[in-house]
Length: 114
Length: 112
Image (cartoon, rainbow over all chains, first blue to last red; front, side, top):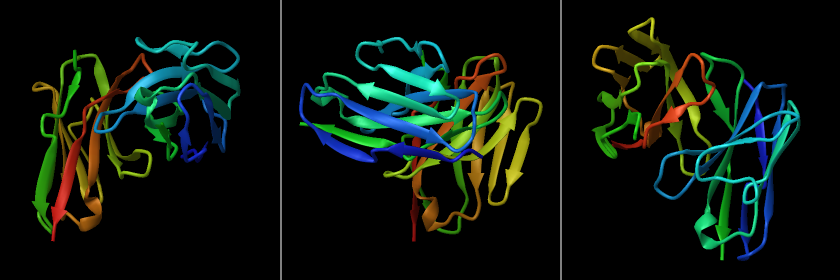
């Protein structure tokens, strides 16, 4: 299965600032996803990162707040913009190589906003 | 509308005994089901999956059972070990969709 590296692994940020999270995969993958896991909650899909085009956002998530880039089939970034304490979460990058295949996850970025 | 439900937030099992985690779904279009394990400081780790054409899949200590008529699946872990203490997520997808739909998770605690 694909090996997924996510950076940074954790960060503490000031309110109003922005942070970009990087996701690098060791092989070309069709589908890349960004998730959020808030404390004590399940995984919530933020968006599907599409190679060469705009990401597809889920209800409740917008491009201005969570801009995503995917310049090629092995790399994507998620930016959390104008952060507030409510954005304190674990952000997870995930890939899926095909239908009837599992998704695989990076170790996540634990983000705390003061 | 929760399409995938894990109704037990937590489960405590004696080491060496069987752990049974349950998951229910509502969408009859789901045809691929997965179980993941998650430790606090890591991303979810894929454990085992099952296609809707099967009713059982086994991998070592882990077995997943699928009851399509009841829209229910379960994960059996036997024997349970201390390292199995984690949060377990059930997920499902439909053939036409790459997205996974996730349950809320069940925290499994293995007691010595």
